[in-house]
Length: 137
Image (cartoon, helix red, strand yellow):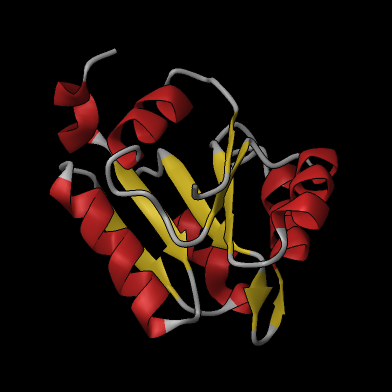
């Protein structure tokens, strides 16, 4: 898959931190992926259901009104959303969170800060069905 397909993609970004939300959204838009943003766990699944199309979900693990793992459980229970690649994005300790995210059923893990040079390839790999489990280095 080449990056020319990126403009056909729409991502839901669930992130409460304004700077984290802006960075991820800008990185996605820079490669042509359209974004829909949500700041609250309680509204994330409803937002995804209302989207005409959702190709990938980036989910912060630490949201002020809920836990990213709880949101993932709701996504995986919904027949319309369960196949959508859902990626954990967090600044939490990767040695603890990455195995927990894998066990919970996330499709990938991107540690903050995100690497803008690797990001396009990470998105390509995610959309090809590959699990991307990486931290910044």
